[in-house]
View (cartoon, rainbow, N blue to C red):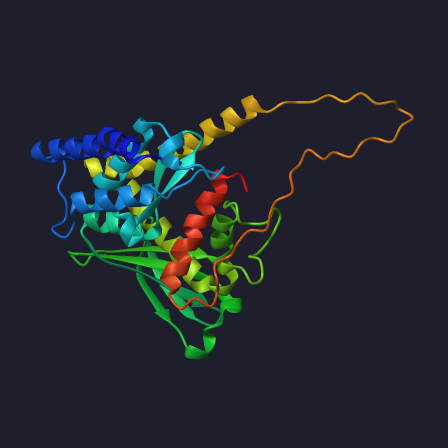
Length: 313
């Protein structure tokens, strides 16, 4: 893609979004944290976009509509996120570009919308003493006593996330290991019919950290969905998930419409031809489990899962 073509796309997307964000700010509909620069986030996003590809390895800026590029950028900026901080990534579905939050991004939005001070998670192992009460459907007075000898990923029984707000109000979300695996089983990396994570996979090697990520995501989304905040940021937070699902569905419809069905006639006396219509899946790449930065591994795995989903793996 030539410099002139890139300049035209930038003018039709980045510049348009920047002007829209400016209008939101002037109208008092959008306020960013003091440490967030929408201009810097847009620059990071533009640099990132130039290396994003679709499932056929074609540049996203060539195959995606400019409207979808602009909408993806707007979703990112309005939520106060930056891809350079691993708070989200761009994924292509057909001709549509989408912006998808990472769990770092979900935590960032939760803190901005709710004023949460901290968001943490802990793993529950066999032998741990966990106690809590239920008050109006919410977990309260949660206590967790753990012995060092209990820590064993093969004896993990669940995990919980805790959100502490500026007024010292506390919100807990707890999940059993069965619920966590059920959430994992919805992802493309999970083997059909499998009861647990594949041995040697990232979800096996870093089981505790992946469980924390899952329960944090659920806690943040459940809290935000029950919030009465009607901010523009929260509107885009909720709209993003809908737009991603819509883009996935549209891509699937388009691919099915373009596929050809070939009828083959054969004699009953002849052996039935083997069905070779199913393409063999190539090996899925797993991040190197020897990497020292677990957060990076988790985020890379999350991005890989979304990319594999878009490629039909």
